[in-house]
Amino acid sequence: MLKVNNIQVVYNKVIMVLKGISLEVPENKVVALLGANAAGKTTTLKAISGIVKFQNGELPEGDIRFNDQPIADKDPDAIVRMGISMVPEGRRVFDDLTVEENLWIGAHTRRDRAGMQRDFDSVASYFPILRSRARQLSLLLSGGEQQMLAIGRALMSRPKLLMLDEPSLGLAPLLVKEIFGILRRINTESGTSILLVEQNAFAALHFAVYGYIMENGRIVLDGPTEKLLQNEDVKEFYLGVSADAEKKSYANVKHYKRRKRWLS
Image (cartoon, rainbow, N blue to C red; front, side, top):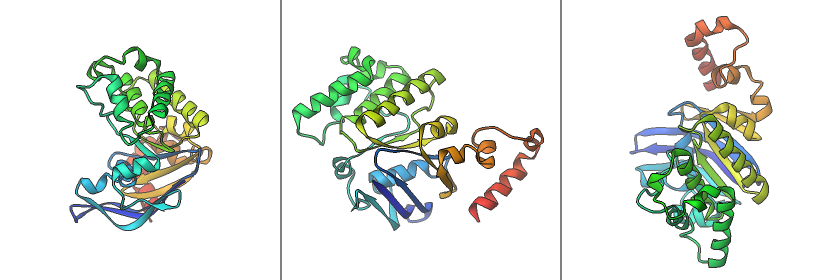
């Protein structure tokens, strides 16, 4: 469904953030994009959604295609109409609008009133708390409720591909489990593909079927998630599991060797 081929992203014509990223998201599947802070994960989503060019960024190299259609030069609203919607990091709900108003804004590219109402009811079935607080200002919601609202708002555009940037950020473990359970329902019941950016590698790799790991603007490792979960580097540096306790005292050395191996 989505094919990102060897893209570069440069900010202010000087700072290269992405250095030849390639990835794919198949139809009806969940794909995870993992990496440490500043690895380039959010920039990847912004490049796909068309936002990066409005933030002093450009794509001098590479190609992005959605259902075989080039989208790298399209504006964000056109990309949303094609079927890609993004849930940004930090939720970014409109604080001075009600829950209901936030949801309807998610459908601003649509004109099919009957379909919009059906999707509104569908969102409310996934997140019943949003229906009960429909007239409440979104500013007054808890962090978890705001995350549900941000996901619901994205669903109102009826996306074929839903991209999420750190949906577990700042949330309690039980709430993270609930939200990932709802995302799984969305994927299986509506066939919506999901590209998930996460630092919670454990949750992401158990949710997705395929994963990519980024470091320093590059994809350094990818594969089916069951294989990534067994990879020694992934277990040690992303899951906090080490077969040898003595390795922990050599963290800096191991980190250097891993980076040298992955980035070679």
